[in-house]
Image 1: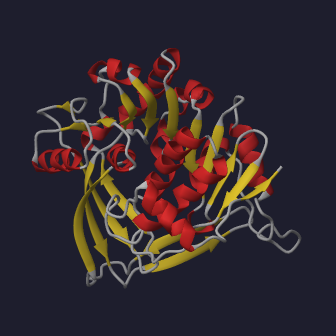
Image 2: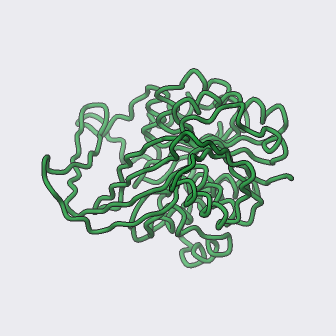
Length: 348
C-alpha cells in the first residue's frame, strides 16, 4: 500500500490551560530579545480556558495532509493507557492509516500541558513518554519505501538518534524528505543531523532553533544600526546561507508574529502572517510546514506554497486544538480570494 505522505514523530494528549493573569516579560541584550511567560510565585490563579485535544507533530501534520486530500499514514509510538486509546481514536477519525503505529505495554504515552497567554501564544510543558523511545527496529521501513514523501516531525530523546537513518533510507529509495527539526533534536542529537541536513528537500525550523543550530545570533536594533526596516534581517540571511547544503533544497524559518522566511539557494522570500483572530498558536507551525510541503509538492511554486501555508496556519490559531481549524485547498483559495492583496515578497 503506497502513501502520498507518511509522517513520523510525536503523538500526545494535550491539555490547554489559559489564564488572563499570565505576564509577558521581555528581556533584551545587545545580541537578541527574549520573551518569557511568568506568574506570581506561590500564587493561585483563575483559569479562563480549559480543554483537551490530541496533538504532536506527526499527528498534526498527518491530519493536515489527509485533510488536504492526500493518502496519509503516520508512525508514532503509543503505550497501553488512557492517552493511547484517545490518541488512536483521534488518528482514525482523521482518515489517517493506523497500521504503522507502534504499540508497547510498558511505557507511558505522550502528554502535554499547554499554557496560553492573553496574546494567544503558548508555553508547553510536555512529558515525552513513548515519543522519546522510537527505535529503528520498531519501524516498518517498507511503508516509508512505498511513500512519495517522508515528513519527519520533531523527534525527542533517543528517537532523534534515528534521524539520519530515516533520511538516508528515504533518499536511497527515491522518497522525498521534509524535516521539521525541533529544539530537542538540535540540543541533544546534533551529531545525528549531518546527513539529514544534506538530504532534506525541505527543511523547516523556527528562528530560535535556527539560531541554536548555526550559533548565529540575530542582533536587535541598536543606536548604530536599524534592521527592523529591512525585508529580511542580514543575520537571518547569513543563517540561511549557512544551513543551505545542496541545489534544490528549500529552507523555511518561521518567526512567530513576524511571519516566515524562505530560501532556495538563490532567492529569499518573506511571508507575513495572514490576518486572523488569535486564540492559541499551538499547531500553527505544524500547519504551516505541512501545508507548504503539500502545496509545493503539488504545484512546485514557492510563493503559492507560502501563501497557502500562511492561510492554513492562520485558521488553526483561531481555535484551541492543533488541528481544529485545518482547511482544505478550496477553503484556502476562498480565503485568498477575499484578500487579493496578500502576497509574498522576494529578495535576491
